[in-house]
Amino acid sequence: MTRRRGEPCSPRGMGYRLLTGRSGLEYPGHFEVRRVSRNGGIRWASHRVPVRHSMLEEYIGFEPVDDGLWDVYSYHCRPGRFNERLGRILDDRGRAFRHTPRV
Image (cartoon, rainbow, N blue to C red; front, side):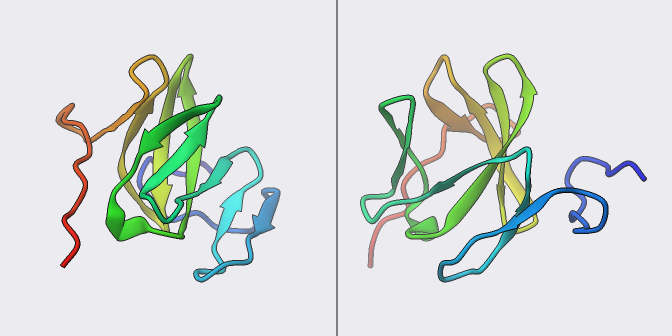
């Protein structure tokens, strides 16, 4: 069964791995998984990539789409696409993620 983009994943038939953390999420085995640090970013190829502060200490999954392009997943939603060349996560309109202010 083929999954359409943005649909929730089913753990049957794919190599899933369980992550221990606040969320206890499962991502498919072909995903790259990173934990958002307390400073609101992840490390990718020795570079810091800013991510939203609302995702602090959560695991996010990166699904390969094309050379240097990755769909980013948080839980079962896709908040954007990571462009390795730019070192940024962009939303569907091509805008860069902005840090949400701490209150």
